[in-house]
Image (cartoon, rainbow, N blue to C red; front, side, top):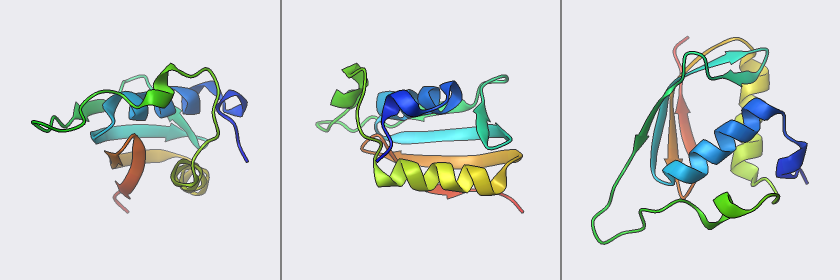
Length: 103
């Protein structure tokens, strides 16, 4: 099982961004050799639900935690893509739900 502290810096940044967004999306995320690139930064869009859960995930305050299977799957996709741009990563409950990319 992969732990947060074992991730490379770019992947750690992405995990934290997903936790902070909680519900929303990340648009135009660039990849270089399977690693997220933040220059230029991707567009972060947070969804606000009235009367709903709008804060960051509780794990965002933890220094280390187990990486969930959805995040592991996302990183496997990054490794397969290697170089390019992800059009959209939809985030639900701080986790990647689906990804859109152009071929």
